[in-house]
Amino acid sequence: MDSNEVMIKIESLTKSFGRIKALDNLNLEIKRGELLGIIGPNGAGKTTAIRMACCILKPDFGDIIINGYSIHYDPIKIKSMIGYLPEEPNLYERFKAKDLLKYFAELYGVPNKDIDGRIDELLELVGMTERRDDRINTFSKGLRQRISVARALIHDPDIIILDEPTMGLDPATANSIRTFIMKMKGKKTMILCTHYMEEADSLCDRVAILNKGRIIDVGTPRYLKSKIHGDVILKVKIQKSVDLVNFQKKIMQFSSVGAVDFVDGEFLISLKHRNEISDIVDLFNNEIISINTKEPTLEDVFINTVR
Image (cartoon, rainbow, N blue to C red; front, side, top):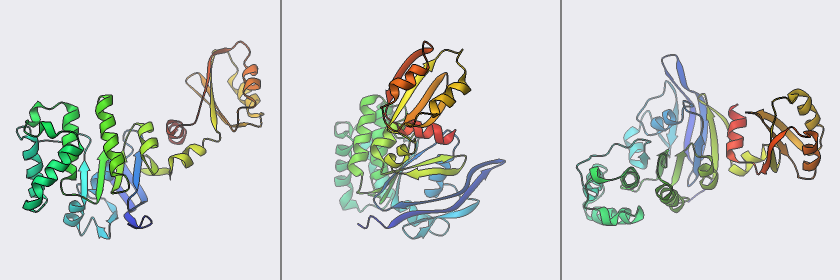
């Protein structure tokens, strides 16, 4: 596997729904074997871009080249290469788990001699071997999500696209989905759309921040967090009586301070090191309600970038 080979190339992708521009000249490259996370607020265009990659929607302008094939000219070929798990997967309620997988295996042209073995392998992968003969309508949301993962993988696709795969799941089930993603990492080219910043941080090779149909920033989680301008964030919740402008000017005079924001009654102070924390705290005298420190997270990056 050539890790430098571009597997997915998004070129000038543009899509509008009436007056709403969902995607605005979107450009992005994803390497073979890479796990790319896409984060962004609701309405940023994440699902629209994914549905175009899966040849479900057509762009107004632009193209997506997947392993050398265009979504305009080779949709059938592209669909055969992709395993797609939508945010709300639709399942045939009366099918048994094994029959659902067999149906989609036949639909995707999996050779008959390989189907039973493939089903057994996938049911074991998602921890559902014991439920193989149970009907879909008896499954909880978590079990439905697991069988949906197996369905997306039934034809052994080169690319796996996951749209909010752990949304609304209990912690144990969400963890099992994340474990599956880690097992596939490096073996498949993967796109993960998620609202969970910790999920993107721990799983993804790179993360793209999407807002208003455009890529605002993209890079490794470490790179994105480094742009917060510090190794630690000092959070100081204060009384309403504080002169915000005056305090912000005083804080910025410290050499360790990289940036200062004030959000929801709280100063967020990015520090290059911890040496001057006590001196900064002394500025506030008795105006402090609470104070703590934390390392920068993707959530901090997301809030700063989107704002």
